[in-house]
Length: 316
Image (cartoon, rainbow, N blue to C red; front, side, top):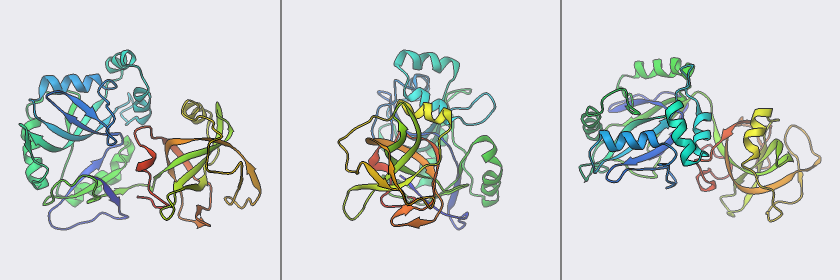
């Protein structure tokens, strides 16, 4: 299941609230143990400590929905550590599992003892999940996600937990079944972020200075230019250098009309294979189907594919 963004904390009967963890969404199953991303990519070799915990601490026939996170030594969530783990070899991932372990925060139970629970109400699934997670001896890489029905507690989470890197609050209806692909959950984040496809870069592929962002046009299905990021920091440039590949087989022209930042010139850039997804923070201003101003680059999202990116300039 997915979530749509809201600009306030919804309240009402049967609503439940959870922290919005900043990590890799993951389905985890036992018998045999498998970790799978939202796009169906196997993550098992990247996070062996979680695989071992699932095999040793939970019975077979379980399917969990959760978020893989990493707590840094300063007590904050560290998404960068997940990116490093995502590109690590199996041997290196094993070493990182010992020196920089990750955790799976579990917030839903879709199967137990081989029984399908997705059609049951969230309140029922949560009760069974709590009984299941009681089998897990702490400390463990497996952690039960927090949940409350008190909007005052949810508001406190929203106000205080950004200090440790929690993005906001998730809102779910206790009466609802689990419907994959449906945006029946809601999320209230501290800032509006969204995803875009990298179609080009300013500078060289080995040292990009800025990104030219693309979105798929919902009316034509074609990738079109959506905006440009502000200049990257040296660390961001180094991080992205290994993820962009120059190409001449590209739907965009060699020169672009730069409509952002008041610059109407024709801009030279390097076209790259449009398969890298990044998370950005745009403002609401639009012109000619593009973000009017340069947008802030936040991070690469190798856990997502271009098909996960919203069309046009939608934030969902």
